[in-house]
Image 1 (tube, rainbow, N blue to C red):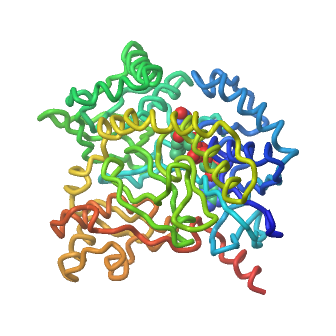
Image 2 (cartoon, rainbow, N blue to C red):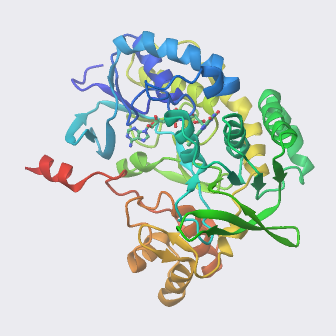
Image 3 (cartoon, helix red, strand yellow):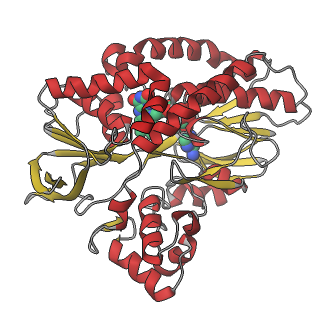
Length: 458
Ligand SMILES: Cc1cc2nc3c(=O)[nH]c(=O)nc-3n(C[C@H](O)[C@H](O)[C@H](O)COP(=O)(O)OP(=O)(O)OC[C@H]3O[C@@H](n4cnc5c(N)ncnc54)[C@H](O)[C@@H]3O)c2cc1C
């Protein structure tokens, strides 16, 4: 490596840590940046130090992996330049813009591995912005990091494996979980079974969570249409109205967790100008990469859920592959494990595809949202506002709609409302979802106090 600038990795989850380990083993000292307080990413999120929940309670079946991950991280940290609680809020070729505890600064890079993971995908419903309603990931973070529950009686509504996992974790932690309401009908399509059987241990875990929940009194229903999150006089969530079959029902609760699968966090790759393509199974735009994670940009590599949501084991393998590709491109010795990792990643594709199809984004629910349902909560835009903007402007590109009505222009920059808004635009304009395009990434990719930016500009 001839550049005076370091190799930088964004993200200290399974993908970023595996990449850092591979680079450190090759004699490099990468800079590893993560906004979290501790390494671990989503799956191995660590509790605050004063909390003492046992790993088996925190991570369940993944407790053994969490333990070896921690041991590996402890061994790795002296060999790398790790920057915790540091957020990348903007990026340009050769430089990242960071903020850490109110201090803003730049980090030059010679080569960059983006391992920024994924986040919840949400289909809104009427009343979903009331206090007491969390994304599934948010509910899990409250439990893992803070040892807190979002309520005593918590309903889980949405789709995907995380729905059952978090419901199970809540019930094990002492919450009353009256129901898990799944929008999909997972086993309607028998053609998915061979694909799902491609990862028997994971499939078995999912079935175990469902059986355990049922055995402990939780109703587990599929094919549900959530109608409205009800709230009490204090404004907090008090129940969920939903349709199951042809019957409308209301379940009382004081906490509601919603989530419809995960989406890749792709803003940094987007700011740098990487090429994207539409993934029909995941119903989202993903940055393009070759089989080892080389993006369309030279010296920029992608790994983990930030490239495509495929779970923590594939994330780690793709982290190693991206680092090996980087070493090879830099003319350094790459590890020999790449063939094994490539086989593992390729072998998991059928299972992930079946999972994506078994738990699809409920696009028909998003497209049929009632007029008054808030979709973009930062800007207070309803489904009706978005449909009217499409009708009046005659436009169907999501960035044009944004220009007309400020969709996705608030704090979240469309990270939360983007998927549902795209579905609404597609149905209002009667076009395929892929023709709506994607909200272009804009800095700051995560909320940054203006005072921090102003101080940097002085
Ligand atoms: C909310 C949530 C909860 C999950 N819980 C589980 C679970 O319990 N069990 C399970 O098997 N799978 C879980 N998953 C899926 C699992 O996290 C992933 O498959 C796996 O962890 C992906 O690893 P990764 O390294 O690609 O990303 P992650 O583990 O998500 O790590 C990405 C890291 O990048 C950092 N980052 C992102 N953007 C920035 C930025 N701009 N600046 C600085 N740092 C940044 C994040 O802080 C994070 O630490 C969860 C996913 C989500 C989104």
